[in-house]
Length: 110
Length: 116
Image (cartoon, rainbow over all chains, first blue to last red; front, side, top):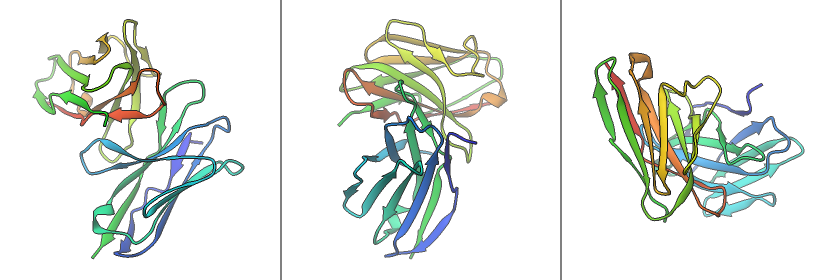
């Protein structure tokens, strides 16, 4: 089993739609979780950290479910500019090392 | 905000040559820098963790004699791909963690290496 798993997609959604991505992780001791966004041939950029209580930043909401070992990202009112690959990242416990998921590709269509 | 730069952004070289990539934290001190590699349509894979003033820690399967890492100061780490071969062609990205701060990593813009 991979340490961090994501559905690669692509998710093709119309503008204005709501879309959700899930990510599962295998190490139950993991404590830090992030969602990064990566545009084609560019570096990953931090979208948001994921906190135990869940957190929201504008149209983006992240949730953590420790019991089932998954995190989710919800995007409301999708924009064309949201088209990108969304990377789920889990920090290895006891280190500062990141484990990246393979990413979920989102295409928002006009 | 935290800014990390990489140089060069793109390099094309002949097989057998060595290529050096620089990673700099421009507005903060970074005790730890990380080097990743990303092949097309794949995710980032951690190659090594670079700590200022000490030897880098390499991930399993990464040859330390082929990928030389030097972290001589709190703002600069270098990755040298020695005797490059076409299979080393990839997108190399560094990241930096602020000293005594959270575990957030800030990524450089990446270096696209093509070995002919």
